Length: 197
Length: 260
Image (tube, rainbow over all chains, first blue to last red; front, side):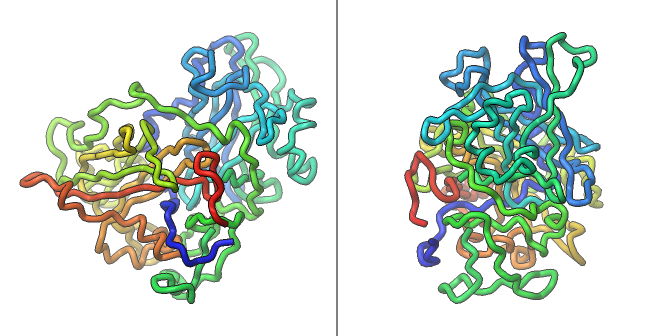
């Protein structure tokens, strides 16, 4: 428990504010890999506030393993950084172009289902929010994932699972898959947010 | 969350909410820890009302994804990106400043070769952004964005222009104190931090809901840069030091468990 007697040492968080794009747009490509890369998938959705209105000034950061479940510097995928940024548009939408991650070890080495950690920065958020994207076509691994199992029920699990969309991406590579994942900051379907510390 | 609201020692007394005139009730933090971060739900900052999550945050055990973090290399930045005064065809208007400091973990270890990004208003208090409609001039020679990598000792250095204060719509006659937005990466996902640097002696700090949202005054003071005579360049620019300590807001593998 905090004692309140030792001086604070960590620098406090402050909001990224409405102009976060000025500092981050140089890197906000939305692309972990170039579009058209074999095996590419798209994760798309909207960021919505407590009235269901689009959050037009958010900066999202995606952090994930490669398809083998590895991170740099161990990853053997060309130019793989595992880190991708995207800014939301005027309709609150974002799009991530990436490869599906492989399973990665949890705290005790147990397998976790493929997932992407997401940080959300925006006006009105005094700290970042953190959530996870899982994939609807990984039912077996999802069913044994310890984080999903600890959420407390299927209603909460469903809020972290990106839904694979039917049909191929119009005009896109033949084998591309699109997943839908909305981020709701409040409301009946409020996204599950984590404290990753 | 350290949500001391009074009686815990000097410098940590109650802070009056600049909007309501009331001392806000302590907001239950999602996770107990040593973090001094502000609560998500802070009524004095109006934009939190529709954006702060209502459900408590859930713990996320530190798996491989959280134990690792992005690595930035020399290819991420151009050395010129750390000087915000040289991007245009002439010098930007305003008072030239040098802002430097160290990024470290909570045990003092330097955060090496990692990305530091800043963005800010110009000297007139105007951002180069389509949604900033403040009636103040843009500066054709100032974008307000910069970035660099820390060195092997965790040190960074920017040359910029002192940003102006500006009004905002949060409450009647609301003004933001002069500030520079900072984005830093630690050595793992949990240490990611976006914050703001303020200037010493700014009378607007006492009235600013964002600054005041850090309920522990000693923690809030960590957001105020120090005037730095040693970093000042004679006949050229004043220096300020802003050191940043990142941590796992509880515990990190790199630092081991911290006392909770």
